Length: 449
Image 1 (cartoon, rainbow, N blue to C red):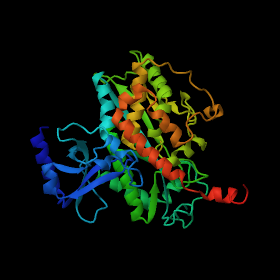
Image 2: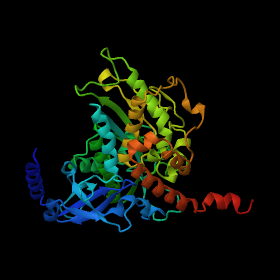
Image 3: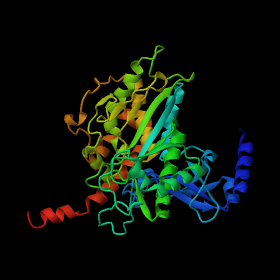
Image 4: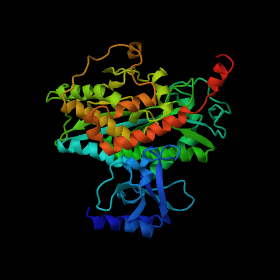
């Protein structure tokens, strides 16, 4: 479709839906939607601008101490270009409203290196240069809770249709799902209205915890889908006077929430590059796994981007704790599901639900790509309970960040400006969180040390 045809079809779409306002959205480094509301007329001109500094702010809306080491000190404007393939309705808006994700470029039209979408596109180009196309299928876990207006108070699961709270939910329980059927119905309706391509929803192991699966497809398309989905879940929950959270570990005694990523790679003929002509696993498949094993520790801060994220790795409940892989084994970080040859894939179980989907997908595909290019050998598959091998991942955000720029090949794939900015932003978050004195410290240390 030519650009003029695309513009005409977008204009027709806006008129068809009587759109009065457009959300001009950028996914920031944290993975949240930032941007501004503009009129349809201004949107069609596609020449909006936003301050460059918005790309690199902490989860609390602050700048890192070294912010202007990697951003222009004048806080210049960047140009934002609409990706019209992401044009969707906003079902929860009070008036007819559209939303569209934008790319960030400078005045010469060069993609901004710190933009989340730019980082993912950079990795995808490495595959394209080889004649390869990654295929991914994310699985998103989240909790719904009662609204909690006091952050000092523990979360509570919501009351269901029975008038009672869940206490010991059965994983994949159908009756447990029906407790929140009104919420689930509205969630599906909103996904349908936005063309969010979800495959199925199940009740997970935690109390009022759910997992939604996406149909497999292009990595950038799926990142956009997950990004839109997370917004949608939060908004639908608010309509039901609930909270929805993608925190990696919102409860002390409940399982964490992950974003598992199934990933395979196709060649120009649409054949899976992980198998040979007979459908057997080949060297590239094992090198992809080897790369995931070698480089994941260096990219862990992109899978576990918050101070809370690291609680999930030590929580049991099938959470990964080390770099083992295996077949049909949910105790490892890299699982190979049973599948036909065309669907031969690796499931990356390290990312938390709190990760930025663009950056998590970029990191995951980057690790596998580096494994293939450097012919990294994989270990033997783990045949038992991998948790018995102990926790061998970084246990906190600081340790993980200190590894992010340790290998030149990782920095080169993700981009040095992005790595510098991301590390600075997340170090700022770590230092702010590290100043907080917790209830545990007051309880056990106040009168005992």
